[in-house]
Length: 373
Image 1 (cartoon, rainbow, N blue to C red):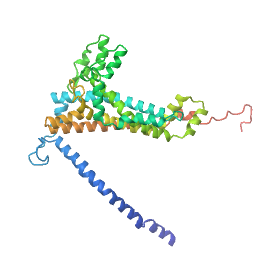
Image 2 (cartoon, one colour):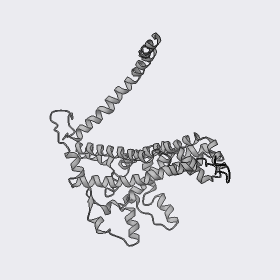
Image 3 (cartoon, rainbow, N blue to C red):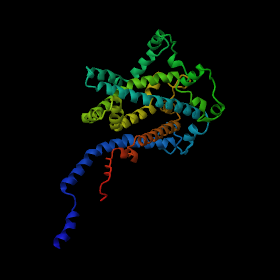
Image 4 (cartoon, rainbow, N blue to C red):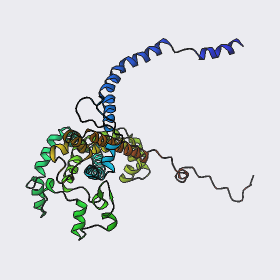
């Protein structure tokens, strides 16, 4: 009876001194980092959020009494008012959306292909190939942009190579036309139907939304794929090397060819890495700024304008700090929304009952004419 009474008291004993000391030491080690993040990250973000709801002119402190609260006026000016800020924001979203739609799948597919290629044991000089593929990723983006301006100029190397096969290359960074409109124009379609040209969103008709990236933005798309595929290749290589060879051998014993082994065995095990690559690619594409700033400053005809550059331009060039901050927070919301959607698409799904029955052992058929007992 005594032991039964004393058992709960032992269960309610406080943590030992060692455990408490570990927790205290952990907080002591992490406190400097928490303070630094709070001072240099959280506080500026909160101040920028306040600026997006205020009429701060950029002079003095945004927390002074001279700064007034304007509510959602800055957000309305770039989304629903229909003026030039709305049209510029719609143009920037259109340009960046096409940039994301093309860059993220292309760089992911190319990086996975390169990772599978250099991960093969039969490939000689794998280290040399890995270094060569990764080298563009460690080069400064400003230097790559300057090189790209030279390569894709009207008399540059790219147009010279195209001339060898009879193609008259465009003046890449001076051509504002959309590539989809150009493709439709080649078959005689020069204007869209009424329901696309008469309806608009953020100051742009749906026909303009479907113009595709401009020729100038297409050159930036090539540059993004060229410079980022090497980084994501390393992530895929690390994931491929963690896949056990016994799984591949089992699939080969079952008669699976190389494509089925990759599609049914390798790719499902790369799901966490694939989510990481897609998320980092998505964030990087929506935040593209330095290439635009170095290369075209949004031209020609604002067809390379992006929300990140528009936020900089509105705040630092036009001195409209409220609209610049509002654009930044709308961009932040877009990134979070797409990240959540991507996580939902790549989530782990339970095996369906129909597929599960394929792997269940079949019950033996009852013997004919035997005793039913």
